[in-house]
Image 1 (cartoon, rainbow, N blue to C red):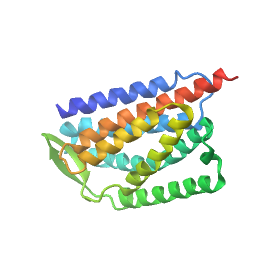
Image 2 (tube, rainbow, N blue to C red):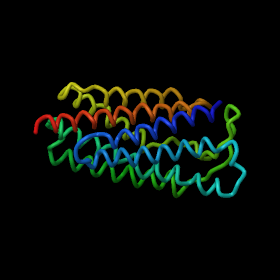
Image 3 (spheres, rainbow, N blue to C red):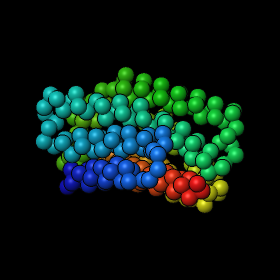
Length: 219
């Protein structure tokens, strides 16, 4: 049952990845960033789908490490994605050099901390939740870089909503924040969190599609 849920997540991620290539106009760095995120999260779900049948094989342990490397290396850049959206939608704060510098420094700190916490200190061990075996981190320390990034982008998404009238970025950010908070100590939490990632990524892609269509409509 759990593997079926992750298989559905995987198919949805691949569908969103494919849809991203149907967006008209030249691809921005934001769109390429989203495509990389889709690929990384799809890989994560693929490894979870394979868990019940492959967890005892040597290659599966090696193949599971990139899940955490991709997570730590990609997610901090959501801050720069949101910064770019602020600039395109005309949010004044997004063009102020001190704030741009803050976002760059914040991203670098989140990246370094994430690589240290989720990669260099990574230890994996078998774990069986709801009859679904997988390899999970032995550390119980929460991903602080991801949490801090989520805290930062929420008020920025409100500014984008106020300026452009597009609320999906805020809704997606709030949704994943609430799901992560509620499910943090639950044994089924990783299932809910991966589902929230799909919703969040969908909100980012729809926001990017809106930006592209607006730009094309103004030319």
